[in-house]
Image (cartoon, rainbow, N blue to C red; front, side):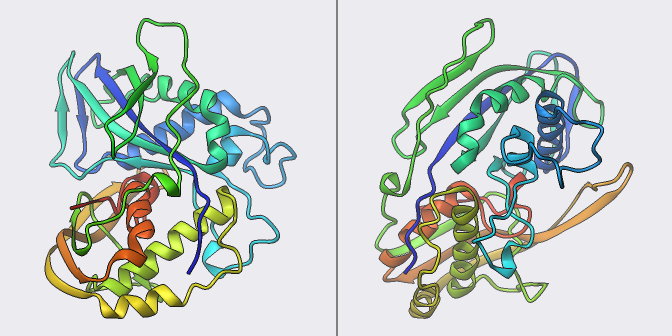
Length: 314
């Protein structure tokens, strides 16, 4: 079974509306796009290049490391054709958010592995996320606070606060040893945003446990081999999917969800399809505890980097 070395920190980011702001039901893609543009403006020293490909500074550039991560030569896997990003926006699905001046909006951001060394740049980019305007009304938001949190103990550390010039650069770092075990015998996943897991290019129509385990194992190992300690390279990835067959699906209460989002080109719209609801599994869950807990913080399936595939365990 694979072993992982993938440190991460969970940030809680609070913005205050300075104008009317209308955020869509799934605002993760807009926030992720605004964050990327802000980081690019702050970090890129060769803006004349159309892409990061071939840039000699890509291995040390905060934007290149975060948004255009390089696939190391020693990592050879078909599923890593497009390296996953080491930042994950954590924003549950809503029915849309209408903010008036003075209202606040809070979302989560998980930073992992090598991206932790770029924390000063990432915090600076967060300051600028809402200043260019967000949502349908292009309303301006100001950053008021960034906290590093331990989601399992409630411990918090304030990294940045409105009105204070100083920035605290010592977040709470969690790794595999800090992940609590899942409940033994039965676990329930509450899907906080749409989950889209694909097999052979097609969205699966069920989320039975072996399907979930394979998707989690693929995502966590990809992230760990690109941005972590690469402890999982060359290890056995067949045992857990085999053991997952012994875990039963006790309850599968899902509904299909379709959500529009902004595409990669101006005025382009893309559709996201997936499932929301609750799932309960019964059996010996101890071998899967690390995967389930990592997935709880990093998401699973398609579009996980901007907030899809979020769930909580109980």
